[in-house]
Amino acid sequence: MTTATSVLPGYQFASDNTSGICPEAMQAIAEANAGYAAPYGDDHFTQQVCDLLRDLFEINCDVFFTFNGTAANSLALSSLCRSYHSVICSQLAHVETDECGGPEFFSNGLKLLATPAPNGKVTPYEVNEFVTRRSDVHYPKPKALSITQATELGTVYTPNELDALNEATRRHNLYTHLDGARFFNALAALNLQPKEITWKVGVDVLCLGGTKNGLPVGEAVIFFDRNLSNEFEYRCKQAGQLASKMRYLSAPWLGMLTDGVALKHASHANQYAANLSQQLTQIPGVSLDSPTEANAVFVRMTPEIINHLNARGWKYYSFIGQYAARFMCSWATTQADIDALVADIRHAAPSE
Ligand SMILES: *Cc1c(COP(=O)(O)O)cnc(C)c1O
Image (cartoon, rainbow, N blue to C red; front, side, top):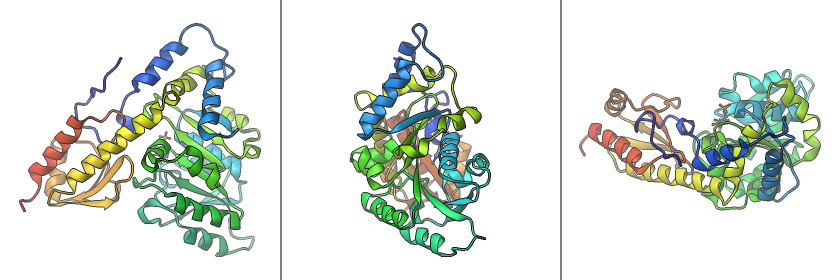
């Protein structure tokens, strides 16, 4: 079995995708590698994963696989919208800031209506504002809400918040798309059944992330409203997202979806983030930027700390602003990683 030693020793908190392949997924790939299998998803590994996902969500849903989250989100949104429609999302949403216009491109023109979202969460108030602002033909007609769970700021929508959004989308006849690149982290944080934070609260399509939680590559697009998946396989194929040797995209999920492995890895990541967050908030000169509810820690630090971390070669993102940092934990994060980071921050912190 592989262990979680780093290629770049201890210096990686940039993203949860700096981690490798988890042992369970690796094992599943090795097993799927024995012998021949039908191509393009007609193999039994792929069928089995689809069934496991139906079991997990306790509903007869339609499942597709893409190579990455950008394709999953873009194609899912394009299946909900016509070219003159719009999608309400957070200003920090991955679909808005990190997909190079993929949703707009694959839908031949849809417009994202991005709203400021406190702690990364879209509110029913904002949904209502965007829909009721205009109703004339000159305005791109709102057709869907896109939310991210866990959010881009490491927070988690509570069931009550999801209920309230569901109420707003139903009132305005909007579909709901859920970017679940870190869905398992949210699930682990909330300790609920998957259905309770998806189709039961009005989610029509979920892009379920696997990569950041230990898969080598690949996300699943899950349609709870099966009417919306009509001809989706053609979208995947045209977009270059239909894997010829599909079993290598699907089989790793077998490792994740057996014996609660996906949740185990997500909980691990969340626990280390909680631990890091808790330690960092004790240090003078460090303040939390948004609550640590999943596997991300957002902090602001003094310039001295930032300079020291950079000099020491730590990798992290600072897109939230100057002297700010996002530290991501993953299934592979170790206590030694956390302790080394905390020690370096403490070293450059002002004395009390
Ligand atoms: C990582 C991520 C994705 C997927 O990104 P790809 O690089 O296209 O796989 C989607 N949404 C969010 C919120 C993410 O963090």
